[in-house]
Length: 531
Image (cartoon, rainbow, N blue to C red; front, side, top):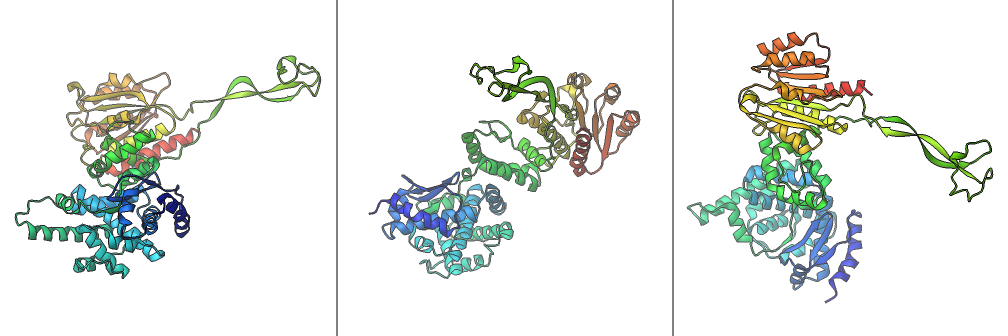
């Protein structure tokens, strides 16, 4: 048999040409994995030597390698091609199937159908021949029956004709309809599996995912759709989009928990922190609001440069008679003191990064009493508003302190001094005590520094010691922004007493969804006026 590496070397240029030269490194053949033909990690395609040798008993190894590469490159260039598309498809599958194992398996099959069908329709490929001879479990037989229907190629499957007919009406190549198509695909598979389970086990006690594992444990598959194949940047961007589309933190967390192990492995391998700390469990609530806030990100101006007042050697210029001697560079003048030959330093005034007057640090005061929304259960626009402010200040290079309070006298308060550690900051914002509403002014006062920080507060203002807060704010020279949720006697009292304080801006909101825009609008106004 010809050496497999030589075959791969000869075939890879053809594959690149057929697929319009994708930006992928040269694949390699590795040992192990008889039942999985390939895997992709960080764009690198690895083919299984054992799989190729096993399949080569019925098909030339060159065709096996070519088909595997066609399959892999089609996934990379067409479906799913990025982390967000992958997790979106999985999310839709789980919404129908509910079981994690079954959702992963069925979403993998759907992506295979899309990638393979795109490949078969666009170019000549040995993929049909590989599917025809490969060992098949029940789900593989369903997929091959579907292939026979939509490709018009006999793959030797004489079962599941009705199921294939139902699946064949799905528009697999219409990217805009993939979420809907995934749900339709999953529903057909779910109904088929339930019917079969009912016939074989009237007691109906067998877990559907275990049934799939039991029937398919000896089959071969072309690849393993692991989510750790993507780059840290793709994962970050995908989670940001997922947070924007999720209806609640609970929905976001339900998906994050299913893929946490895989994406954490990528971040740890690459030394990335996902914004929440290397080597630690992802806090889904904090990550949700962090990623959601990034969707509102402000355009951040570069920090201004200030003159340092000191002069530094910048470059050499010819020395001329009459110029000072102390700027002469003896090392480049060869010990000669001659005009034109002797070199002198040209000095310029140094520049340092200054702290922009419009970018002070910020203390965030957030109410987490029982009258506020619990951020772990559903969208807390108060937490989102605070997260938007935090994101804007951190992007400006400032630090943020957090005072999260409920019934401070009972110990229901969280204090974080000025920090740029996103994990600690967002954990502080997401704390929920759900008790009474009383704060300690002394803890707010402890955040004051020589360079007055901004104060940003979100509350419904039903604070039992509101008078103490009013007296303190009347004494403050800080720029204070207060977002008041609801319209009550306490909020009216606060507005009345703060009316003459020009450094205090108060925004009352009835609809909590308005909070992020109010927060960003005020920060944008402040930054624009302080350039």
